[in-house]
Image (cartoon, rainbow, N blue to C red):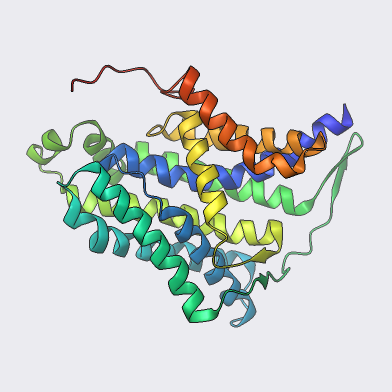
Length: 292
């Protein structure tokens, strides 16, 4: 029982990182029906901004987290305005190919600027472990989970209690009707990219703390897993992305605990195949007929 609880705690810590990244995927898809495969690389940029803030400017973890979120929010808006806005009325495949191109540009642009070598993340939060009923919970896991919950609650508040959140929900429901109601759709889409990218930036800093090593290609696998988490929960549905991320983290943790750690990346894509075969709309989604 202690081992079971331990693996659930580990899985929730990892899953909270996936959930933060998945929220960006699901928000953008809900608004413009675009799978932004460059989102994982925004997560990587956030990790490096946090690293340089801590290492070179000697900031604490929370100021570095805020700076990373702010920088990634601006970066996400720039990506949307430069790469995606001109393709607003283009086919989905054109936007998808552009997203892959933007992803590669960010990855290899980062390698060109700083090199491909991995970087050790500084440990600036010497937290003590907590032992409850024989289960050891690291202080780092507690902090990761606390930051993730705060950001998810803040996102729910923004979406359901603010003017921009209401505009986002209106555009997601019907973009043309939102325009007729006087909503600035372009600004709303940019705000969606900004919020999603800020969450990815926070996930990047948390990931660096959790795994202690970052590199320019680190966004590929977590980005794809976060996409799986978004599909698992129901892409376009914010609570679904949260639950999907946490569930995927717990599944990975159990796979590693069972002695199949080499399969922990592969199991995410097995989950993707199963969810597409058995419940394509995801756990929180509804099957909707679409005219073709």
